[in-house]
Amino acid sequence: MIRIGLTGSIGMGKSTTAKMFAAEGVPVHDADAAVHALYAGRAALPIEAAFPGTVVDGKVDRSLLSPKVLGNPEAMKRLEAIVHPLVREEEAAFLKKAGTAGRRIVMMDIPLLFETAGNLRVDVSVVVTADADIQRKRVLARPDMSEERFQAILQKQMPDEEKRRRAHFLIDTGLGMASARRSVKAILKALAARG
Image (cartoon, rainbow, N blue to C red; front, side, top):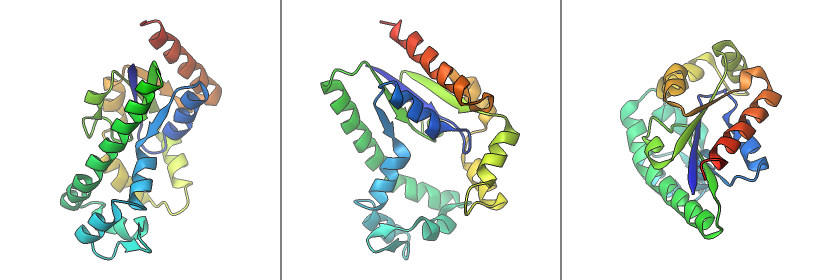
């Protein structure tokens, strides 16, 4: 089974690209979706213990958690120590299920693929990229996004240039969605040819 690691900085179009792979029949494990589910489930109590006042009605409230961790490396490490092992368990279950189903290619959509050494758990890495101006416009158009929050998120992420350097494959969403779809198909064709 070939394991693709998909990543890209905020606003690059990673989630849209993951959907393109899914539309081609590739099972996708979305680390962000796993975190959302864990925040409403088994991660809530340990997070509340580490960051009191962040859980409302049994679910982690990101608007209450964010100010406690963004820009605070020590707090972020504590949060990651709680969440990352749980996400790895979800990922292992996904891979087992895909293996049992005989899937040849699977994808792990991991926003911090290189930052968390997730690239060591995949066979190839695909980086979704776009021009910095396009990225900025996309991100600042989001509700509840500020320049300060955008910069804090960027600080946590490896620079796009470095991600591109480490990638096996690049998909530039700044060239449009039709171009991105062609790139997805070309990557899958190249991987299928590996036998």
